[in-house]
Length: 425
Image (cartoon, rainbow, N blue to C red; front, side, top):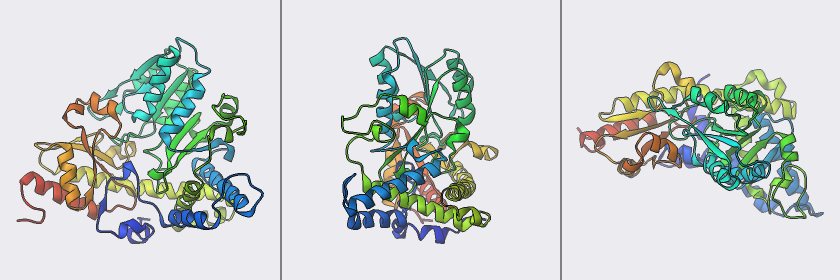
């Protein structure tokens, strides 16, 4: 079934504004159920953790619900494998500090030039502190895919850690993460996956992937500003954590420093309830499974993200075709329509004669939100030789966007390149 865009868009209050949101890789708009959960939490159950009184008990119960829902979203084995934090970057630094306590001088850590810097700098800085070696994996500039031969060569060095992304936030490339995880484990490496860019675009199954850690941010998949980490329980249990003495000594509490963002956790639950609604709407075959609270929810969430993934192939195709028709536009990343499964609908480009920030400003004046620069994927723009020229213009669609919005984007860019006002003759 194709997505019913009016029905879906009605679930996002911000979309009622006269604005086209193609800034989604930097943060999606939030679902109504997320807003309602956060508001209800702050009005009805706002309290700190661990009290004997009603609001504290209800707050703790809501956090438990959110943790279980996140475990279902990732297909984790148990809710204790889910750690909440400020954002992906903070959680990654936290895990890197813990892993650093069991690393030795001379150990090798693998990072890639396709990653967001939040999955690079924590490991590079850790290596500097611990006397470890960093092995960089290159990309193919022609289509901005990871050089898998170079990745395998890096694994020949028997690294202790391999950190890589599920999808690139700069070029939309989806990495073959299941294959990469298996290869890394054969080499004896711990696998840390940044799934921030992929999470809003397709189903994630940590058991199928076999990864040790996977991290993302809820504000990238229709929720609030909150980081969510999956960690294999045995690792979370064994790793030394930086914590205050009264804090829990077992996962996940040992890694959740200070008072949590409980209203954010409530918002995450609301965002996942929106995705349940979407999966329920488009997944009649799962009605019976849905009646079983947890196993059913896992199936419905998977169905929702599968529907999203399918619909977004059309958005990727439309974005690429539209940009290719704009004179002077150069797309970076996969463009072959037969390879759309290897990307998400995040498409970056440059426009001849115009700096990226000027293009973004021009579109902003016309109610079209896009990003320009390096998007913290500094290694990508450096490798492509674009950093000194201002980086890229990034268009990031998600399932609440439409082909009609992409057509308006194309009209605006064509008018800019032809020196005519939008809508002019």
